[in-house]
Length: 55
Image (cartoon, rainbow, N blue to C red):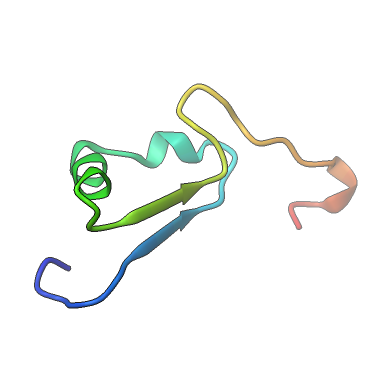
């Protein structure tokens, strides 16, 4: 990815998406190389209505 030109966006839409972050992802997002949008942070989780059945 470092050799590619362009913008990068990472969407992490899971119940525990905050746990997807690692040190490289944090560094890349801090220097503007990547934009991260996640459903939650590492200390929370997203909730969904059971009747939606994971939809």
